[in-house]
Length: 242
Image (cartoon, rainbow, N blue to C red; front, side, top):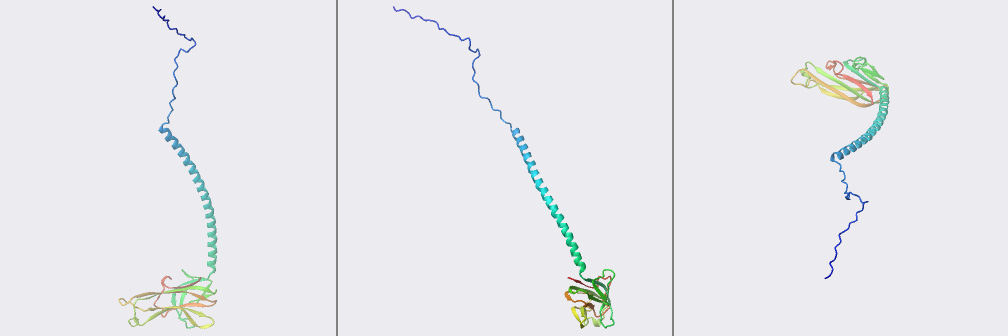
């Protein structure tokens, strides 16, 4: 009978230097995520900084424009003042006259010309002479000449209502020519209202004419009692160089 196989007990060798703690594998660290509030706050800070930078840029541009505009305005004001002084000087050098308060007269030479007030109220003379209703030109040139007459009648005469025409004219007299020269003339019907005896009407004449030195201007109307004077604003006569 064969011999039985002998069984030996298992032998384990224990290393005394081995760690008594079991090995545990390291796991991956969990990343720390940013909260939405933190992102919003960061965005707002960056936006505020950008706004400050943009505002500073525009303030600088505005300051430059303001300085430039102030300089131009100062130059413009100085130029305007100089221009006004120059225009005022030129205006003062141009002859002009305005006489008011027409009156009717027949002078010694037989001319039926209106007399005027040339010193008081709105009347004035500048480098223009006045004698017996005549304005005398001192400086040759083109002049704007005008005249306004207000006519009025408290009681119209019946036999004149349909037949009489009033002639309002500005005339010129030249030293070398004896006859008067009409510059502009207007005709108005006398008492043309049928429903009332009272009658009022206006005649205005104006134009640009060339005058030479020592030429004279005057105004004529046919009858004195229908010319209304009042305060110098209803009837007047004048001229000024252009």
